[in-house]
Every structure is written in C-alpha cells, then in structure tokens.
Length: 89
Image (cartoon, rainbow, N blue to C red):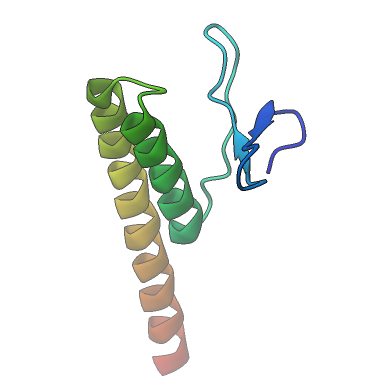
C-alpha cells in the first residue's frame, strides 16, 4: 500500500482498504507489470462495486488499464523476440 494514500480499516474484519484519491490530487499507482495492472483493475472494480466511484468512471478506468496491460504485454514480447534473434546470430 502507498504510505501517502489515506486508508480506512474495516471495523468488522480489520482489513485495510485504500481510500480513493481526492479530487484534484495526483494519484500514483505502480503499473510496471501485468500483475500491477491486474491489482489496480481489482481496486477499481471494488470501488465501483461498493459505490465509491461511479460504474461509468470505473469502466473508463478499466478500459485504460486494459490498454496499459496490452502495451506491457507487447513490449515484453518484443523484448523476448529481440533476445531470441540475438541468440540465433
């Protein structure tokens, strides 16, 4: 969890949940790997599911995260192909 991100603790379960970013404040999420993107998608889903954010907003955010995931996937494949080509030379 980001140490600078406000959190809330569920009084019943003791689980810690990050609160959504405040309007006008910069939000930073690590999106370097597909696992990071998956984690952020799950967070957006939970926020939409609980009504913390509008489902339309959640859909837009997940769409953008899908595109980021696709770029990571393609970049990874490109890197692997380059390594294979170098190994065969």
